[in-house]
Length: 296
Ligand SMILES: [Zn+2]
Ligand SMILES: [Zn+2]
Image (cartoon, rainbow, N blue to C red; front, side):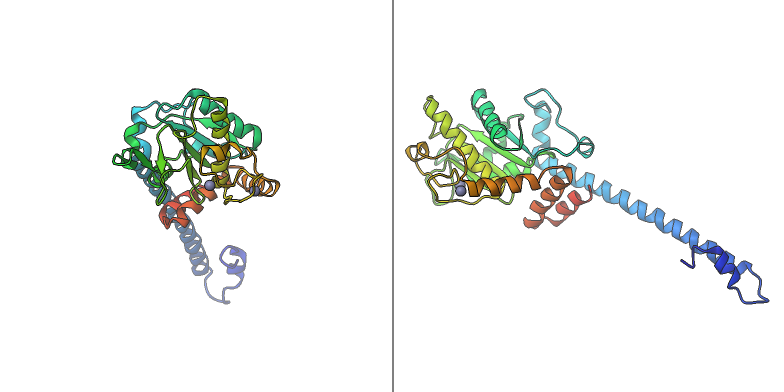
């Protein structure tokens, strides 16, 4: 307060002494403040430059290289949004991005998104399919299966900047450690999931219902729901197609209530940014977490 009050500095000078040293000191301090402000601004600018670098590196390591070889458009013909476009977005429901790996029929992708948007307060978009080469490291030739966990890491690395959840559908069979196969796999922390239609697809309406159940089960996981061993809950575990046929499409009341609470907490851009930072922090990727927080 004393620094920014020139009158008080002037009056407070000892009698008989010239006023100018006090005033000179005052302006020196004010000027120093301006310089410090300028430096702080530079630090901010340099932090965001650093962030751009981090983001660019992440994209290059993740999907950047492949993205160049595929059009940066989603299935509705809109461009992938830039970080700046996201900043200008109004509060919107959480976004689930769905992609296909392999020849997943378009109607199955549309069914996936439609069933999610009908039953939950979310947005869902079908976006550019990755090439098989992008998941080559997850393919285990000796088993003719994908390693689901490796797939989840790849999906996480390639997430779009505006996605709360990424869901990959594949026609290939997948497995998880110590299991011969799985219909799907999700990571609760990372909000990514993969579903295989290899064992549920028989061309019937029944297989479409199986897919919808798997979608709601895995997406439930991506919003943080665990398993619930209750016959009237989609979060129950079903190990065979026959068992899956008896499962409900929807979660029980308890799980649905928890699901809606979690989805609503994620609505809006700030919640998205904080959630993306959280995932990196929980993975021990502190610099990436901070880079996301710097967007706020
Ligand atoms: Zn599960
Ligand atoms: Zn339940």
